[in-house]
Length: 299
Picture 1: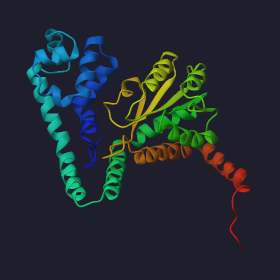
Picture 2: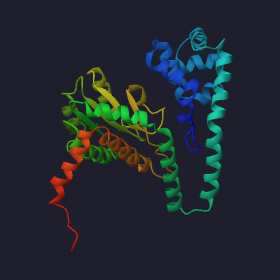
Picture 3: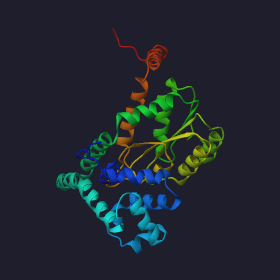
Picture 4: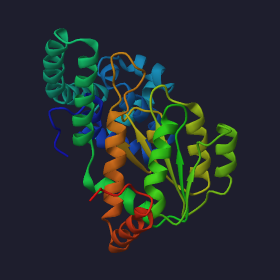
């Protein structure tokens, strides 16, 4: 994917050639190699600066393992890998730094509310550039074919998981909104029945809820598909997910902004609705069913 001018640096790094190699190792490598790949994806800037002994300490492996990792992903030695990290980061951050400088100049003259609106625009632009229609279509197919779709969001995310569940209900065989009254205990009770052929749609934003990860682990162990909507490739839910949709959540005051989350939800539901003719018919039927409950225009 071509990196747009507003793609966050961490997303741009993961989308780079080196980032894709590291993501592949994190998904399918040995335990020690997965640990190193995870560390570099989460801390690419630190990885470009650390000595091999410091890297080994940070990853809790030996220096020999670090050297072997570098060779296994195509570099002659650790120094070669570190140089490639630095070059990739430089390329990823160039457009981001230009955008950040531009925003900083604008924000200096803005009141707090206006600055919040500016950040929302940036998050929306980043979400647009980070998403691909291919991934949206893949997730839509998973949802369409699922026995049951479990939708999970804790804390503030519960509002948006309910929104997503309501959007999905007319087009899915069975939808379970896990974030009901009773909190995590009720959510765990719903998840008891999850298994192969089901989908867990989880939302995870700062401040990240550890229970979302526990539920995702359970879903994966039960052979269900895990789809996550989160903010960055370094988010803790990414390694646990079969598919990830990104919605930037940066904000100058709030723990998270959810403007881009709503946009990603709407993009996903739209992709699902137009994915096959049966869903178009369901949408038309839904309009017929609810027409009697809607305010009619006056003649």
